[in-house]
Structure formats: C-alpha cells, structure tokens
Image (tube, rainbow, N blue to C red; front, side, top):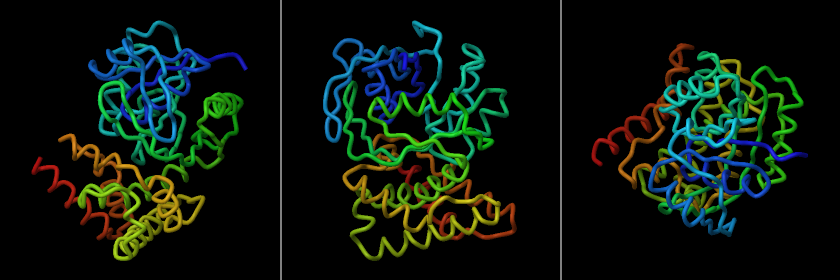
Length: 301
C-alpha cells in the first residue's frame, strides 16, 4: 500500500507515539505545543519502554502550517478541546476525514454535528509524556476503528492496514459506538481512582478493595449503557481489569493531568455517564462521587 499523508492533531503522549510510529512509512505532521514540537524538529521524538527509538515526524504548532494536504487527520486532543479543534479543521481541511482517538463518549458526535466527516476510534495503549521530545510507551492495548453507522468501508480497512503496518495493531469493527462506550467505562474506573490516589494503573487490580470498587463502577456504567441502548462488545468489569493489567506501569491520563496541574477529562467521562443516567431517570452514585472527588482535587492544584 502507498504511504499516506497523516496529520496527528494533538501531540501529547498518545498522539506523539502514533506520530512517531506512523512516520516510519508515511508522511506525518504532528500538531502540538511549541517546546515539544521544537524539540521533535531539532532532536527527534525519543520513545522508551515498550517502543524504543528516535522518530522524526514533521511537527508544528498549527494545522495551517502543514506541509501537505492530508489523507486523514487523527484527532488526539483532550475531549474538552474537541469543539475548538473541530473548528480549526473546518477552517483548514473541511473535507478530510477525521479519526478520533480521544477519551470521552461524545467526541465523534460533536465533530459530526459540526459537519465534519468523523470516524470513531478507541485505543488503550499506555503512554506517558516525559517532557519535550520524550515519551514512555508503558503498554500495548486494543485498538479498533469504524464508521459510526457500522459500515465496513474500504477507507477504514485501508487506514487499519496502515496503522497495523506501523505497529499499532488495529481491528475494524461494525460497533465502534459500543467500543467507545466500553472504553468510556474502563476510563470511568481507572482515571478518577488513579488520579485521586496518585497510583499507577496496576495497583487497581493488586488491591482487593480497589478491584471491588472498580467492578462496581464498571457495572454501573454497563447498566447506563444498556439503558441508552448501547450494545457493549465485552463485559466492562472484565475489560477494565484487562486494560489495567496491560498498562500496569502506566500513569493514567487523568493522573498525568493532575501531576502537571491541568484539567482532567472526568467531566467528559464520568460526567457523561451521570448525564446519560439522568436522561433515563437513573442515578449514577459511583460516577457522581468520583466526578466530584476529582473536581475537588483539581481545585487544589
């Protein structure tokens, strides 16, 4: 297959890993913060851990500086920046399909409602941002992409091949919405608890009290999903434990945010489960409690 031209919009930990891996056989331009992209341009992107090496994707601070017209835009910005990023894409590359690899349940809906050609994606690779130009790949997880209407399109199959060829083993699914909600359930367990307690993902399954709590949260997310007629492809209680095991040495994105004095995505994850429960006249006590606890922790940093 011919190389693709791909923009990674949101060069944090995950976006940087994907930009680095894809750049080996494709033209890749990553959009991120100035210090990070300047280091990548001058010294390369250094990865340690599961993936080791120095990669050299092109990098800049704006979509408008892209050296090419892309085949795809892969969106990896924080969920609370989806609307802002969507507007920039509309202004620059309005007809380019956008694959979202973001946390949260509604990014694809936001993009689609803006008029963008949105594709759904999930991944549970564990990646930590170490500093400008440096990341640690702590663990490999499941990656899947799919059309929001369930079609098994040729374009998604082609992108899956390119991702897999780069070392990001990717499945094509006819139930990407279910996969997104399942990932949301996993994140609703791991992200807030690790952020509150300041622990790596692996302790969630090593300590019985946290394992029991995680199962209760995942079960609540499963019931909310069912009430909203979302078919989860796997059991959320089993899934969060598998992800925690595969990324046991990783710091969750929420804990990384807390450590860096930044906002987490709990409102887009646990907060969305709370809202979706309320829409069905249900309560979501576990998600509501975790949401308020993390919001409280954020207010202290």
